[in-house]
Image (cartoon, rainbow, N blue to C red; front, side, top):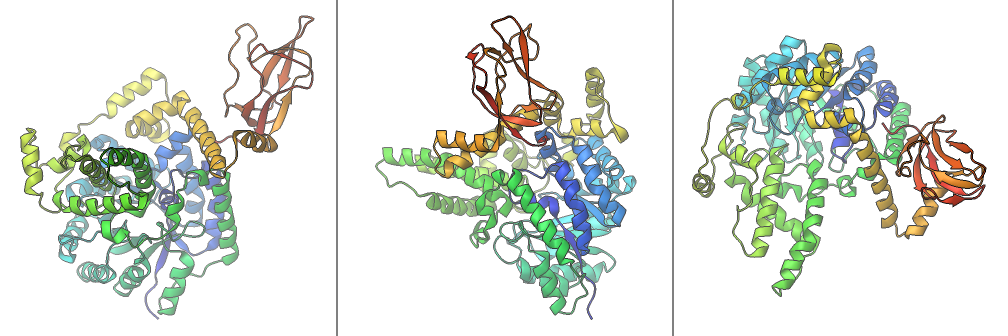
Length: 591
């Protein structure tokens, strides 16, 4: 019998790689016991990059979400882990050192055991401070190698980085194959090389299914000493996501590895519940293409999780590009033609920008430059005319050292703009700010929360946190969800009137109890506007008043919790007894 291989369910990344949003906290708490009951997971990824921004976008408290989701796993003895972006913390751009340091104290207090620390450039100066912060806070730092395929990303390159990270105190190494383009043979040799030098170091493999190499890669790393494999589960496995635990378990079991058994009854329940979450609202934000694998990803090396946003970008410029082509009497491009042009341009751009591993945020930078180049070429203009500030920061070395050499053309372009290249610790470019945010909390009368967790959220996601506190985020999300629902119905070919009928069929009418003029308000002394679609009512809320001809104001109550899907009467309109004033769909609070 070969060694034991453990499984980690990447429940956060399953959603991240499928669409825009994560489940709400009530859904996470509901699914956690079933994940425990499945009995096959030694670890579960509970939070990290993008997770907390999503909570804030809902108008939901991310600290509550992390604490409540990690607790069932803590109680069951299952390790929890998060994803963090090193210098960038939990966001897409750099974070001051004092905010980074606070993050580990907060996350450890909230029940997160392990932090997977990565830098999109594999820059050790961005990772090593986080290793030390995690150790000081009682967390297990899992230092990460971002895997890609290029002439400079060799086994020797990665082993050298692993040596430095392990020497800095990392007891674990993650091979993060975010696009699934790592070649199985190379990954096996890399695993073996690290294990031979550092036999006590735990190696965890994380590979996306996108181009179809992941199962072969899993087998290779296991045969060469890997300890833990990241897996997904239906209905969000495969596609651009991760292999399913059932298939991985069967393959490794057949090869003689010791693997945990799966409680299939619990698996099926968790599978059905995850589908419920998709049907509830998350499916409106899942790009259908992310359910499919594509060998084309081997050509460009972009992560599968980016495909949704990239296709949205392409659709956004498609008509504009064809308009330009028509004006030049040139043939128009199909969307697939444009996709191949973009892939070709990524392939052209990437080496000239120094081969940054194509992972957040650098994959976005490379993709954006390629997209702008495609647009410029269609117009008959030269490449490189539209490079944004963040990409220039990467090029100039402000995010860390690039793995490869910049093309002479890029160096000359930078010099022509008067830009200076730097090679110093990237953290020096971002001074401490925590006390500024503490002052803002005090000024606003906001509680910093247990272990300063609310202060941390403001400092890490200041704009989103302010929107959350003001209620703007919740309102914005509700409007976005309603637009997504309407768009889904429109795609199915329903007319505007048919859409109204469908909404009404799912809702309950609120009717006038007397004849009179409708006043959409709560306080009759200050008339206001009708409620917006998406507004939430509780059973005790007043929906409106009816000003009767005999001078009374009759309250119209909601009597149940729900949201407005249609308003049928205008402010001040004369209505008769029994007329429908609005339709409200029953349901729990979205946030």
